[in-house]
Length: 312
Ligand code: BDR
Ligand code: CA
Image (cartoon, rainbow, N blue to C red):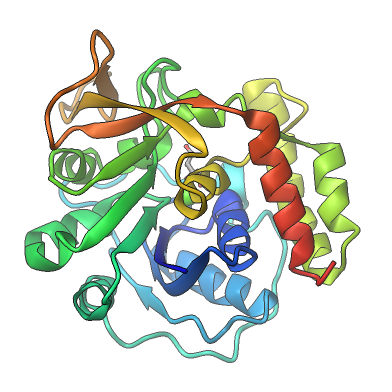
């Protein structure tokens, strides 16, 4: 089983991504680290604890990370997308588990240094914690087997500005450090997430499986309304769950090695991922950009796995 860490800002699709990992025997979720992003850090951390508890997995440690972006404050949170508390207005029962006392970057570094097997790390929020790891514990960062990032966009423009995708825009300096590092990185951006639309019928399948699936479906309701208004699609774009699919089953997405630069200027392009699509990169440090997705297969994977959480 692949040791896995999820770095997250729950977040509706983050909640789905965590549940997908818990439902997947290929991976062993060893740690959840939290970051500011969709809502503030206190809420993302509380939500992570509660989502794990929902699935009966409050044994998975949760360590809280960065409260703010590295340099410039994130201009705006995403409570209008995810609900003021981050989980679409659903109140999950509190977890009996205590927060790991270590800062996220320490918990992550210690896990990386002690794991005999390469660890997959899936950042599905702003990249602040991962940039801090690179800066503070570079030797631990080199032990990351794969970094599967939800963020960016090569061909689709942005979702939070005309240029930028939310996670990259929230901390462009951090993203620049991560995409410029030597860690083997997969960028799962809007190119593959936007066409992968979880339909009302798909949601109904895991909603019917039992109480965990029904709660996941309830959390998604607000996102469903947002997706209809923002993207004009009859379903939900569960960005972060698609990144987890690639983390759980490597090769689920078609990737091409590309040179990626993050716009860290303070103008209209801030947070854009400039992906050089003229040719595949030959650089060792370049990022694998997800460019192709079998959306039907990815959605079937997600729906059938989520239904398993209730033991069906
Ligand atoms: C990303 O932004 C967040 O709102 C979602 O959770 C996802 O990680 C999509 O752009
Ligand atoms: Ca997220």
